[in-house]
Length: 328
Image (tube, rainbow, N blue to C red):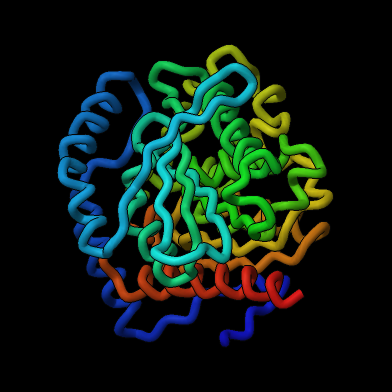
């Protein structure tokens, strides 16, 4: 069993070959347009292409002997769709997953590859939230969807998951929504969460120092335009209001929070978001945070050995958290 350390802030170990592979892939990324939130048309186009690419997704799950259930849950007189993938046998725990996509694109199905790996390796049920998108809904509405899904899963009335350890997982905008959800949970429900695994999230909607100082040649994300993009998401607020938690989780109260594992890319404009969140979170609970050399935003989606090692470590961490609680 891997010996997971607590309170670590360190670079991720990688040999020269792995780093060279990342750098080679970065050269390909440099030719691609960077993600921008400047209008509603482009996100809608990307979302349409995403859905088209997901046709036949059920057959991909069947190759693993699994299937997904789309369930619409009712909480506080509102409905929220979730996508549930269960292991073949009895689940040892539950992962509550929040997908990324800059709040304006994406869906629960886009994380199937990651979630199937967790289901099989960690023997967990994965519940992925299909929250509304900010193309048509204010960001507060997305936060409400995620909070409602968490309350449904953590409430004792949800008999399937009663007594099971719950791990929250989020990536990018999904990591933001995971953090806002934890901050908004009541203490009794928060104590049911056994851990949080967060990849390169956005935790300050006014932009941390690494966002504001991002050079023009940033990969994947449009570094210089990120502050303006964050303002577009919250057009009716000023910067002081944008910094209020839970909207900007960085400034929240982490009392009662669970242990966390966090990752950030060295070349990601959002690097400081993760490092600053970890520093504040550590005052209340153990946090292990790693910075990936030469890695841009979204690196876990890229075909590199470094990404594979990070994802594998995350699954080991989830398993270790669940087993430790089972032993206790």
